[in-house]
Structure formats: C-alpha cells, structure tokens
Image 1 (cartoon, rainbow, N blue to C red):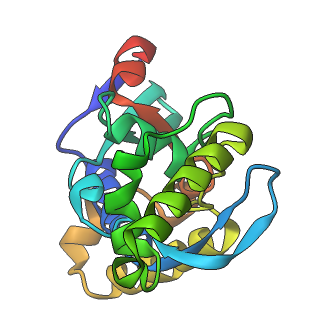
Image 2: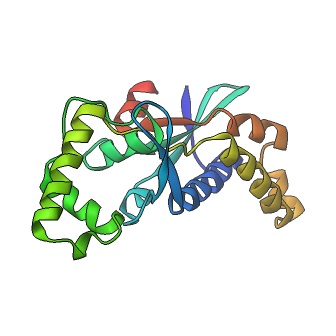
Length: 194
C-alpha cells in the first residue's frame, strides 16, 4: 500500500474534502444514542476549527484498488469531534464537565445566554448526566443523500474543466465507486494502516 501524492486522484480527494466542509457547515440532524434521528438540527462545524483540521489521503492498495480516506487529528478536541461526526459517536460511561459544555450551549441552545445562572447550571448538569448515561450519537455525514449530491456536484465540476484537465482525472465510474467507499481515520490510525 502507498499514499498517492499529486495525482488525478488527489484532485478528486480535494474536491471531496471541499464538499465535506460544505456539508458539515450546514445544520443537520444528529442520531441519538440509540440510532434514531433527533428532531433538532445542529450546525456541525459552528466554529470552523474542526473542518480546518480535516485532510484527505489517497491510498493505493493495489493497481485497481484506490481508496480515499478522510483524516482528522488524533488529539482532543478533534479526536472526540471526529468520532461524533464520522464514526462511532461518544460511548456512554463518561460525562462532559459542565464547564466545557457551557461554550457549546452558548452557541447551540436557543436563548441559553438569557437564562438565569441557576437555570444554566441545571441545564449543563443534566446534559452531562445524559451524555454519561446515553453517550452521543453520530451525524450521518456520509449518508446516501450526501453521496448522490457528491456525484451531482462532481459532474458539474467536470463541466467546468478543459479537455486536458479532464484527461488527468480518473474515469467517472471509478470515481463514483470510490465515493461509495469513503474511509474515515484519525491521523494516527491511518499511519498505522499504511
């Protein structure tokens, strides 16, 4: 296996990364700890810090087996965010200290800053207990809707290229096959994988 650099596949990976950033910058519904979809929508990347840390790697497993992997840092807080956004979520068993939840609540809970101190503390306390008992579900970023949109956007992307630029890229069928098999790794994991 090898990591490819400066190939047509890397241009496809850059395209995918931009589409992922667009997706996580839009409000979306999150799965709950039991796998159901919650009614509330959250902007996944409300501060922009997480998306700026994402990267794409192109892995050549064999001449006919190309994989594209999204990677995120293996250090907190990105490690936790990556798991919640793309992988397993946060397992039950440990809460989040209320002090760390406060900035989240200020950004995402309507009217939180206008509540009394007592109401804020109570909300943060019960939220961390809920996280401890139920965990945090994932955001379905790579769902079928995203893959369909990715294919549509890629077709439009190709329309804006010259004939020579298109020749540098892999075939559309190969690209669409890879779109359906995107991988996600924390950076430390992908290094061990290669």
